[in-house]
Length: 133
Image (cartoon, rainbow, N blue to C red; front, top):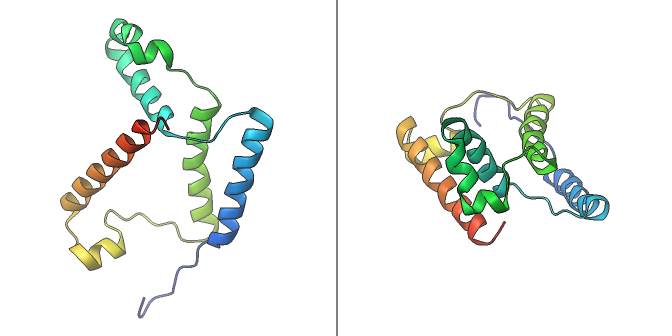
């Protein structure tokens, strides 16, 4: 980054080690594996229930996985706040619609970036759900 102060984030080794410990302790103490994709589906159920509660109550998936706030939902909320705290404490937080790497490769077009992010997220979520994650 020529002409500007280089931003320094957390060590990926430290973050990886702490994540590994979190996974071990989650299984050890709670008997649960850490995951997020089920939480996104449950959150969709929460939102849909506001508009059509009867439909959600009768969907086969939501009979098996009732939309509820549990440890996994709180974990996903914690991911957001943990990321925010990490970025703020490492002084790397900034509002940016188009990341620098994207801008250098594909240009500053926000719509193109939003479409690519949406498609990528959809593919990732589909793969996670397909793998029963």
